[in-house]
Amino acid sequence: MTPDGDDSPTASGARPTILCTNDDGIHATGLQTLIAVASALGDVHVVAPDREQSATSHSLTVHRPLRATHTPEGHHVIDGTPTDCVLIGINELLASPPDFVLSGVNHGPNMGEDVLYSGTVAAAMEGTILGIPAVAISYSSRASERIPDFAGVLTDLVGRLIRRTDFPEETFFNVNLPDVPADEVKGMRVTTLGRRVYSDSLTRREDPSGRDYFWIGGGVSSWTGRDDSDFRAVQAGYVSVTPLHLDLTNYRLINEVRTWMQGG
Ligand code: MN
Image (cartoon, rainbow, N blue to C red; front, side, top):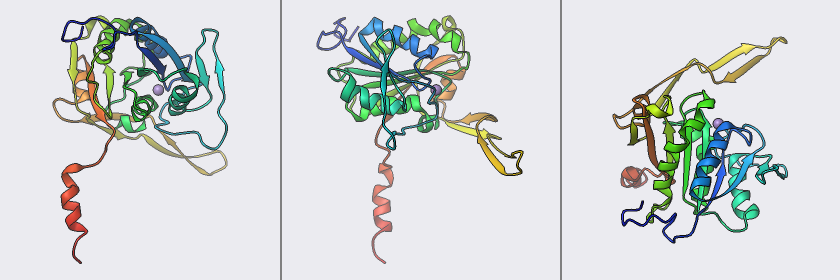
């Protein structure tokens, strides 16, 4: 329900069109849940990568051609990144631009500076860059078989966001579900980005030929952050909703840096 009591699907009253994508690939459990959520809220189009593309961040495929195929359900599948999917979906595959872009539900958390590496978050960001309101959704557990249980929680949350008539410009929302059974979610908290602290997540070893190789990932991560950070909300059993802005400019420093560049 919007504040004025209008329970129509969008401000205009029309059923919205929703582009669904992800970075875990067309076969991911989380994408099936996202499609179910979006279907309850609007008309769904799916454009997703043909395989897992986690941690591809905002990369575009520019050095080879991209191909689109279709599943029996009519979903579009692209042999590229999440960003490729949103770009091609909005500009070429859909008859007209969608009203919303939803990305996820990622198999694993995207909190703190994860948002800078995540393909899930980048897909939502690409929608925002193209002028389409967007939401990225992640489940902060590797137990992806539990994601379908969150369909009700997500339908309520995403519905609140996409019904807004004042969806802010250059802003999108990063949602993380807590690692608890869906019926034990305590509620929703609006949060800031925390900071993840990795240790032992870069491995250097020697291959059978005696040459060094490096492997990024694994290890353990902890985190720090404000009391209202995404990590704290999720750890306490709440759904975390962080508004993110496209503009990374540090406005507080602008005037000071100008003084650095003066005189001589
Ligand atoms: Mn992923």
